[in-house]
Length: 501
Image (cartoon, rainbow, N blue to C red):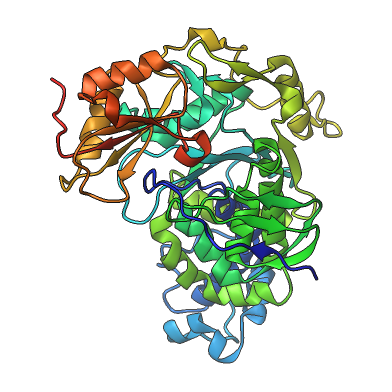
């Protein structure tokens, strides 16, 4: 087995406490695909034990059922000895008891369900608005058992319904900042619906630490690296560089290396990064469903959910989660369909303000989306012509010239003072002026004497307007690289800052 090389981190100027979370959506797929199967087994065992208890008829977790034999089988499959923590917690259970309430499928309809998986770059204890660095649509068809996922590039230029045209990863920020009903996740759902012409029923959102915690729990994952990974500017947690070098070969990657492998995008492009993300997703799925791993995770499920509860948010009701877990046994997890909105479906473009974006080729995207959902239209014998699921009208190709100059420039606001919450107040002001705030946070230190603007060589008019608005002198405007800044402009608030009226 080949071994990757981690060079010693090289220091670089600090731009703030924001770190790209390219893998943030991966854990979501685990919970809603492979881990759902483990959840099903865990839930079935737990419910079977409850069914055998004196409290069975009144317990709120017990629903209707139709197969008494399945409950008996679940009891027979329950972990033995000290691993059966449920039997220890529920006195009065008996493996010889006959459940009087059978099991149910819990799913009221056989209609497909689409779940938007959102990975945000929020770090521990950070507050504010956060962009999505990972957007994956998970598609589940209860009737056929088909499971699929669609990845969207971060720089895809789309219409955010009710607002303006911008990059797709800004929809979440706009929704939170503008008080959209349901916040950023709801507006992200609406934006994806508008793009693909299909309903998005639920979202699941996770922050950076959630993925790391899960991988640390399940251990290393098997990954085949098809080509050399050589990224000398891979960022570290302290805004320096942690060069990444991985030779082609087979690896059992730990949490740190798997995270880096899927996050790096300067080796090829965001399209290559999305491919690696899906590769890691499937590797995690294989690990979770492996013979030795699944029983351990079933026993660990309550602790895992407790550990990860602060990292995950969703609008999916508990009843739906249980329903998905219950039907996961029928999912085709060995043949998950994959679609990436890739280079053939977009056209690189420069906006009027000099921002680089990906313009969608809607005819190709619509054709790919139609093929992806084609399994939902399969005609059943004796049922006549199949009716496609309810869809919204897909978007038309937007024009990069229609966005306001402020919206085309990505801005990060960092607090370099001891005034708590100043970065959020300034972010709100800039949003009210129409600027595109993609992140806020703390600077590398809190003793900046003056407010500074670090720009990556984009629209000079925007830089000048910001300097005039925020009272930044010419000597406090300096250049920086886009890769280092993770935005077009970074504003560091200093002690001399005065709030615009």
